[in-house]
Image (cartoon, rainbow over all chains, first blue to last red; front, side, top):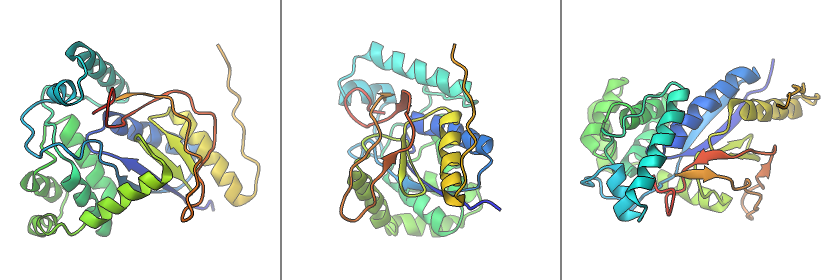
Length: 226
Length: 39
């Protein structure tokens, strides 16, 4: 029986590459044949964004970050195309740019209740696919209730900032690791993988860790070059 | 949002074990929250 491999993933709900990377990582896990225990950690890409930011991601990137609109449009078109290639139908016309700290608090709430992965998927889908708002407590509580959580208790938790310290601890740990971008994967507490890598990269890494844990030599998959 | 080409972190802090790059990592998309990759 193989040992379970812990994978810690730093990610933000409004990071398009994080959702793509999630799909690629999941494919890599399936290809690797390993057992993994995934824990998501908070990373805030835009902590200065107001919850009720009155604009689109295009407005945010052009007005707040100074990126020319044509360049923003090109970036979004490209990432939307890549998302499509992994089965994700991003709808940037419907995306609500917002502050994600409450979404991260909700992810910690969900972790404490044993359902973080389900909550993570729900938040990403709401933001990128369904045009949902992932910054406001009421909207987040609706999402949480949609996967079976007690809505009133979620409202209580988010209103009381029950997991705000946990969010900030994740962000601090990311800083200590030197993580500057997401998604960022830490495998078995010691190996880092940055970005939405292809499934093969994740699979190879997981196989190598598995072999280290079991004291065996990993099976090398020959790659052919073009 | 950008093509993140940074090599993986190899820094050590006193409280944490080092993160070591496992494999050569090709270019992959990532979000860094500022400048040209603000999403």
